[in-house]
Image 1 (spheres, helix red, strand yellow):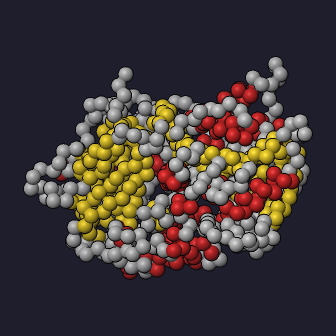
Image 2: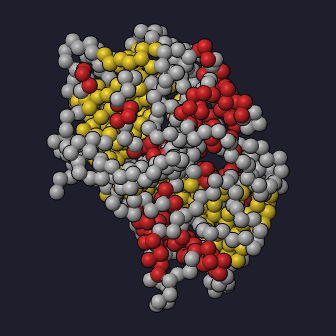
Image 3: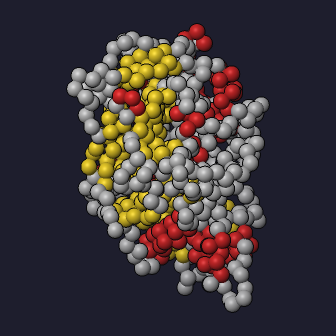
Length: 638
């Protein structure tokens, strides 16, 4: 897919101030055609492979007016091939396009019109010979060619990208070319087994992986401008499609020529195939200024944004390294105004503030020598209170880890279990009737699930629920969430899905904004009261076989109580006074996560006869208290 920046009304209003009196700014597509000259070039890499690159140079560039270069490398096609074919948008935002840079857009090796062979998340090679390459060296060679061959550049280059292009931006910062002075990895891939895109704690995000690779993963024998056709599911009901498909291996009949799908099926543990694709150990010696960007509700690469920033911070003391986290879906900071997510409203255009006050000033300063915006270490949006906050570290200093005990009779509290308590919560998990991840039907991974009302799940007998009494004051949680469960199962494997939820009071008069669930074909705009809303704040699955190691899975002994511990990605969320904190635990989340047969077999090779119901238990007594540990930030009362 091709990423496009939106054209918010507020941006047009701002730009109108720069136009002659009485004249609105030209539409962006017309402005780009009038302002830039387009060039196309096959840029040679060190091994002789040539990468297709489109370059847009401001027409007023000259010896007395030099421009910096802003580069994006993408596997999704630079689009609009031909020197007379101009895009409707350019760069990370409309404001950046109107600001004027030299923009360079490149098809990565093996994609679209570039030569070579494409490798998904090509591993970084720490020691390369003269002709050896990786994505870091391809970026280096591209920057080197651009500064030597594009006329009237000022010798400074910036790189950016969202999602897969965010990965390429992060790779460009490793062993960076001296001219590369500013890099913004946005929703970058960091680790495709631990928490990005297709795996979370060893559990396969099947709807995401299948729907993406059924088109993106089709082979490209030679350079082409054609885009592969999407897969025809024959229905809009993803729950029904993936359930009717049966065991995971049956989906392979549709994916025989998709190499990476076969890799997914062949590598269901954290083996060397995945380890070499983990970018975090290689984010060392970073010289460019870094601005990592992510969204709290990014269903694809929330993990990558947080972990990329943290890895750079940990391994590069003194580096210019900043983080921005907003209330956005995947790429929402560039493709929406950021006022809402699902049925939750934030009361402000969060994306506009990011683009105008953070992103553009960052590139303007490092590439054009403009005034330093003095960005905080971390600019983070606090959901619940709906306000921006600045921190000098992320996670913020001064938080206090507070265990919330999953107590008897559905009580969630900070009180230790009663002495001698042996309370247990149990349910029957049936793979033939998995718990849906979202109430509306949808064929893919609907990003709205990350703030969706969970009442539909709480009503099911196979979902365990704990909640606090109404809060007497605001409760702010800032940072990662630690889960410690004492579990047992009558099967030999199980998934444990944990959800942290903000329960709104029943009498809240506020209405949700008028919204249509994303990608849901038969939905109509709705407006509903938020009273009683069980808003998902964070949810994560954990595949139980990996409780001791992602490399070496182990079966459960039926009935034996064992610990499960994992970390859910960071939040900055305030549970307001009168709200409740809720935790739900279940053993399926379908078809977001593939079904666990609940017998210890290779899930990618499982047969229908391997799938069995099992009784799952959460143990709550004094000998083995189950808990969710929240990092509490001291309240700032007015």
